[in-house]
Length: 132
Image 1: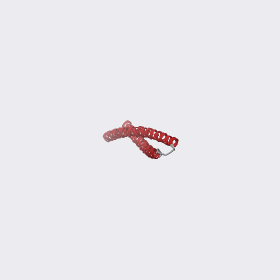
Image 2 (image 1 turned 45 degrees about the vertical axis):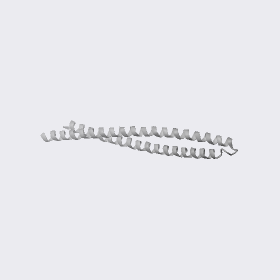
Image 3 (image 1 turned 90 degrees about the vertical axis):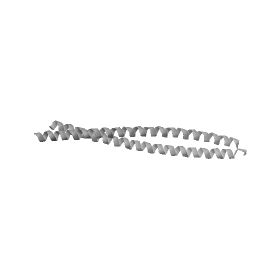
Image 4 (image 1 turned 90 degrees about the horizontal axis):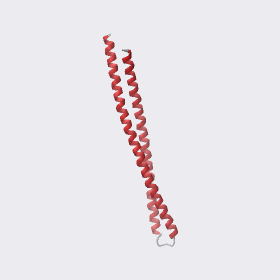
């Protein structure tokens, strides 16, 4: 009977540990999601700045500042490339966040199974105790 109670407590401990791990994974996923959002916002800001620079460069087209215009166009292209890289990075971070959420859900399901096993072992121990 003591063995059954020990088993039940072990299952319960494993269940709580898995639930704790799942919550940690959910927190990490939320942090990664926020990070992806910040990266996406940064990419959009760079993209907007790129469009602004493009617009300014083309308005200078008829002026005698061709060299400056070319530099601005090149800078706008560079900013657009950086924005694209940041968008890709945000997608990668989002993918990591989704993976962590999936792992957290799996851990929660595992935790539920362990807690159910613990409850069953406790019931069995109590039934055995009642028989004695």
